Image (cartoon, rainbow, N blue to C red):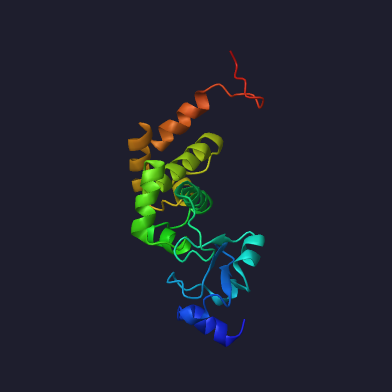
Length: 192
């Protein structure tokens, strides 16, 4: 990539639209040069001459600038947001981080996600984190503070409060209850 192309990307230069597209390898999304999304890191950018080339390499079109000229169905987009959350839940995932990563406005992302999923992205992040914590509490002897940090909630006190509010048990009580349940065999049939 030469300086002219990089400058077109970082300055959102619409005069280059149609002459190339750029993909961001860390997100798997491709854009027009004029896209108003957050500027990518230069080392994560791949240049394509056509949208078809980007699609052929499994890059998804940006929801904001629609480089393929088509609008992605909301359900498909929300599935992509959900998948992103499921892969990145231990990280700090604010609405702005999600919007920047998925090339959308925070307002549009929040509204669409809630309409399709019935919950906000923040509620979904919390749900995924708690499911991961429950699994670790039941299957490991890892300290509760370490589990909290590993699922993206570094404040152990806050983690314990949220966990108890959502499950009805403290993390320690949940671990003890899980340890006393009969273990299910790998084929899915429990002891009767």
